[in-house]
Image 1 (cartoon, rainbow, N blue to C red):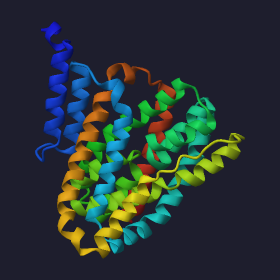
Image 2 (image 1 turned 45 degrees about the vertical axis):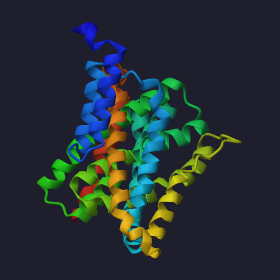
Image 3 (image 1 turned 45 degrees about the horizontal axis):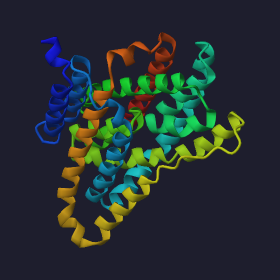
Image 4 (image 1 turned 90 degrees about the vertical axis):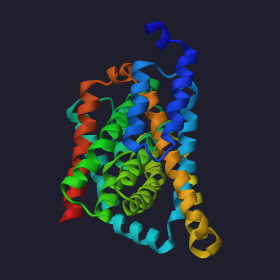
Length: 311
């Protein structure tokens, strides 16, 4: 039986079957993530070394597709609602992350990676500041492993808490955008909660992601790094163009529901792929101190933003 499971051809067939199943409406976002993680644990991922660059590309394409389900007035309202909370939460997490790094005697660069990932947009923020602060490969891998692990937990926990507290679609969408690190888990959790929550969460999260730019500039001064390049999330511009097309060109209105349905399927597949790149070996690399810092930051931003939203 063990030889059968470890057969590469069998692994590839099972992987492809599960990937196709995740494209269907019968699979929710958390289940897609769980299927990927289960595959990685029990069979292994035969395509793992090829997936990482395609995961980000698929996520970006799917998010642009969601733009065709939004009108400009909806996007502006969502962005306006989340602006103050975004600014306060980013400042709070970055300052608290610095303090916790000192308290736990954590490496400065690793502490900064975890803080940036928690404050802005998970793996994308880590990828953006890494070329500037030049951490070791181990520190980058560790930061990403922690962020992706907490993202996976959030995908299951947030909808459950939202229903328990009877949060409205608007409240939950805003909470997801602020409290969950990575964009993939934000749209996954919000999409499970409802279409209105998804619209708000996507818009606020992408507006939040633009803070990568000023944070990267500040990072250059903190780490005294000259000549570093800032990685700008250009796909957010395409998301805005999709919203404008859907708002001002009636021909896109009839296509909007179909495009967003395909985009949601793409997001489910993205979460399956992310789950399939996690493994017990990856989780074992996470130390107690960096995990403690990340969890404290996550709880702080989650509870703080929730109290603000429901108050």
